[in-house]
Image 1: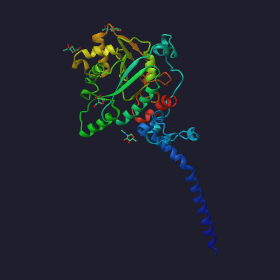
Image 2: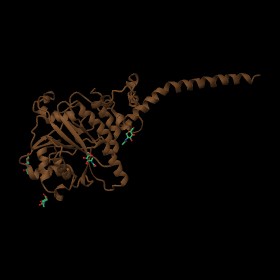
Image 3: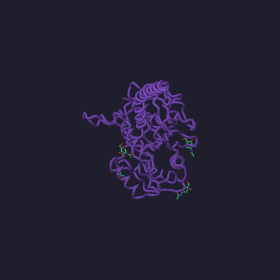
Image 4: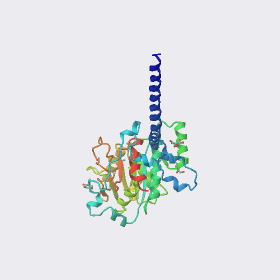
Length: 352
Ligand SMILES: *[C@@H]1O[C@H](CO)[C@@H](O)[C@H](O)[C@H]1NC(C)=O
Ligand SMILES: *[C@@H]1O[C@H](CO)[C@@H](O)[C@H](O)[C@H]1NC(C)=O
Ligand SMILES: *[C@@H]1O[C@H](CO)[C@@H](O)[C@H](O)[C@H]1NC(C)=O
Ligand SMILES: *[C@@H]1O[C@H](CO)[C@@H](O)[C@H](O)[C@H]1NC(C)=O
């Protein structure tokens, strides 16, 4: 019966192996589940931001979005983010930027900005027709920012040209989106970043009938604009003749954030379209137009500290900053949806 002994031993060993596998499987399962929830945070558009819900609903029905809340016990561990997500860690963050803002250079601290009277701002976010997901994300973030504003008022719309290939399918998608949110503006010309969209945008903004704003802004869908910080930094500035942003030595401001006082937009709108003047990078064109037509009255304010490229992305060294701070106005070059998670963690989730 010598052959029996090894058989029993084999069975025991196999059993032990099975027990170990079962144990590992069991203990690892919760962590795997959490990881995939974390991944979903940014994929599932409006469920991204947990804060908006409580305002709308007082019903005790458990909200399915709550499953995206990280388990606090596991939160201290680094969530393992799959796919694209592992390219983007948190955004480096410190209480103070390594540079001084326009106002700080003049001896006005960030806190003192609250002493000036509030402003009304309109922001046009340039986008193109098929970027549904990023619009959903920005829309949700911005609505939350609006509800948290103190004193100031900031409105926003998405600015599109007519898509060059405007299929019936795309049209019905946009119609549905706009029926739901009412925040799409289609300018009266074919989509083109650098061949006149700027002129048509500023003209539209100046004539926008609801418009009772001090300042009108152009930004892009790869830039996070901190509404309260923008408003605070504009509060002490002139309400007329203003041209504000990160200024290039050639007297234009970079396209990630162009701020005009409303009177300035009206001056552009009153001019007729000149193809030569509006052909080229839109930010150069705006700067060039203002230089040629209103230079003597224009008040240029350059904010070169608080408007910058994503600190995580060293590829964009130019206008890059090593970290963000509570006072930052614009973080630019958020080229993919996962890149926005760091922004949400810094400015949206932590605020509450
Ligand atoms: C947003 O999310 C909801 C639910 O997750 C989904 O039904 C809807 O299609 C999404 N919208 C877009 C534009 O991704
Ligand atoms: C979207 O809806 C708003 C509000 O109803 C409307 O003013 C605007 O013209 C619409 N935009 C498009 C592109 O249809
Ligand atoms: C258009 O702009 C160019 C460049 O500033 C200028 O030379 C030209 O006269 C303008 N054309 C008209 C019709 O104003
Ligand atoms: C325009 O104004 C700026 C200062 O605001 C000045 O430095 C520049 O020389 C002016 N340019 C022209 C063409 O007048």
